[in-house]
Length: 406
Image (tube, rainbow, N blue to C red):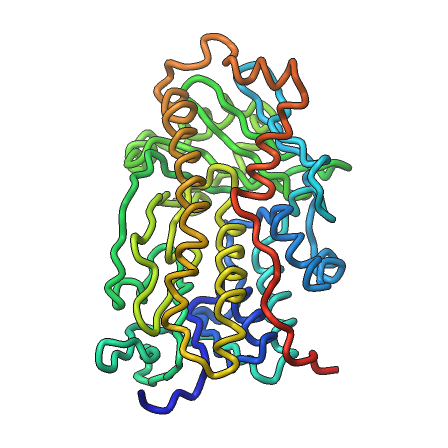
């Protein structure tokens, strides 16, 4: 193999890529993260930072600093099913140091990770640097080529470039499409600030809308059957405003703030996973390895857990100059089960809740599960455990080889 300038090149400055960058640099590896945009400031990105992720920051000694970033604490998840409002998950009893979801705009999380990682002299973040191909030497991935023709060689390349990953395609990693029956329109409406966070999911026959409390505005997710975006647009903006008002009566007096279709962004939902996450010199994690449905808001947290697992298994050996190719399969083996279990649960919610509701043939009576959650509050601990901590909670095991610069 030709001389590698970096121990690891990480493509993608999202939650998986930035957390991996921090952990590999912390272990003493020479790290370069490539992010194709000029900054992290983009709307409608996942920003539900779950207790499992907050616990990782506690283990790193960074939780207090992270929580200085703008955020809202969400101690439970509440939904309205028909006319019944029910607490679905109560995080208060989780045995973690932050038993709540932190609603934190993703750019604040990513900027925090970047500032922290930049304290390590062996960490480099290159913004406006887009990787468009891999470098292949004798069947092994030896780095990446950028859009401006540069080559960055590395002993390990980490594909963390999202659900439309260029690297997984160029690396010929096999993708299994599990099918997602929904897409989402995202938009904002104004809100009067309240003392408590009032995030809510509302399910009524034919309509699903999630309203995320951002303090001074609602970030709204209008869920609809996949492929129906053009039909909804063709019906006209007035019809869409009326649907929103019918689905969430508390928004009826402000739907006029939706001025045109430019105010509404389409999220095309994917549900897929790689059947093989690696080949010599290359490993995919996060959305590049498994795209998640918005159900449960778990995408960021699974991506971060992947990064932690990869660092636990690879960062020390990589920093020590060892060949990590034989260890790549262990990362997939560690993270495939929680990926499959989470996606299976999301597919169940798709089939049993979302599709019948959107088909306008559900909720003629209060569902049994909702009745049980109302009658037996202890049951709320089960979804809290699954959503808040996931199916295989990771912990920081990677070494801290170099002190942070003063």
